[in-house]
Length: 77
Image (cartoon, rainbow, N blue to C red):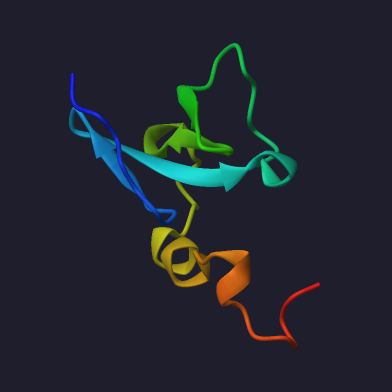
């Protein structure tokens, strides 16, 4: 088993499965801890891409993926 070492949030690919990171307070509406394929790592919940709907836009998700500390002052809360 390989260790996951990362200093930034990333989309992970494990065993030919793609996992997308979410913060706990931003989980999607379809998330159900009993039926969704997910795991927690360093404060993020990684959800399997196959659990997302067909209308999910992965490119848009990748473009918005950032650390809060990297946002400019006008975009941060």
